[in-house]
Length: 268
Ligand SMILES: C[S@@+](CC[C@H](N)C(=O)[O-])C[C@H]1O[C@@H](n2cnc3c(N)ncnc32)[C@H](O)[C@@H]1O
Image 1 (cartoon, protein in one colour):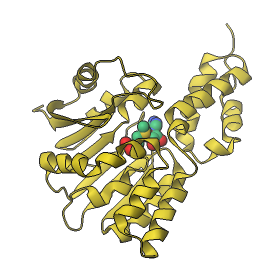
Image 2: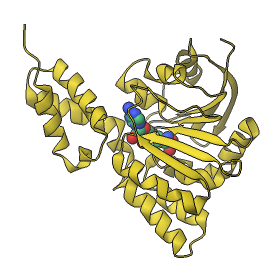
Image 3: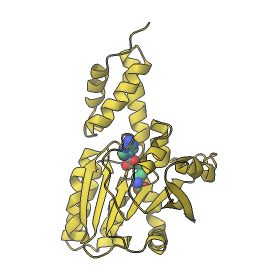
């Protein structure tokens, strides 16, 4: 039988690229492992791993997300209005850039569904913690968030002071969703497609691992380049993600090119 490519060698080749060196090592190791199990040839395995990493992370981003967060904090410290500084920084990530025009309505809908939670968990967060000034929370709230970009998760806690919310950030691969904190509200915004591209059933497994009464999930209505509308029926996607997850669909709204779904804990 053909021997797979050496996982460690594939991992080191991928990490040699500055673009991916700042990602959570466990996440990159998982992708390198999947690539080396698939190809005998190391070049082919490294190419496949880079393609998967681009699809999961690189495709959404312009420049360093940690720098975007630091720029926001510095601008506020220099006197810029909080929302203006946040919106400017959000433009460095495609998902938050696309949401910028509908911020008020988007977060008012979440408040109508979920009230003012004291604990929020934002999974696969990208730059969405920059939207905390739009999100209704209780005084003294904690906002926990995770992503695979260590530069980003290292920078996010600095938002605590200007936003008046305790921001706790962790580098975590959600395809292995162990140890997620309990929260009154979980946000899983535009992350379902990304997770399902990495492993079929990964988004459902994240839901099944949660201890949260309410989860707000969103799906993009078009591909990142807007070259195609998604053909997958969103209702079907939500149906398969929630099946046997412990959650049921409890609300639906659409803002711009994003569909928002409220999931509520079902009786288990
Ligand atoms: C399409 S973006 C959505 C970002 C943000 N939730 C938003 O809506 O603005 C998907 C995010 O998931 C992150 N991501 C991709 N794969 C991940 C994984 N396996 N574990 C955790 N985060 C992941 C990416 O780095 C990226 O920030």
